[in-house]
Image (cartoon, rainbow, N blue to C red):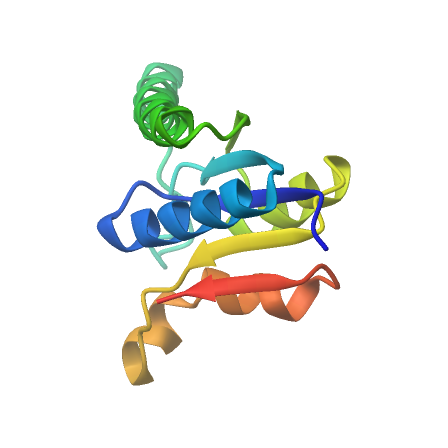
Length: 149
């Protein structure tokens, strides 16, 4: 049925449900997984007054370093969960990109035939303002997606 599963996480409590479910499924099926976390670009906002705020190279480097440390921590915890279950897992941090795009690209490049991710289940204005990464992935891939809530 499935030969390789991509499990997406942002390290949140909700995302952990997706990790747990994806790992349990992988164990049952006897397949390997890739666990991915994505960090977005440094948020730069336009002031509306005709100029953008300029950020120093040091500030951008500090942001990037911090994002890498957080991603490493998220992935290390997920890999430990996989090891406890006896699931073979590799990890992937994709920095400074759009989340849905990175998840889909990684699934394609690693020949995954299932993507597992959690959804925060936002509705109404919260979903409109924050978007839904799960919804974006579902909309833009032909790979099956299992959304855990």
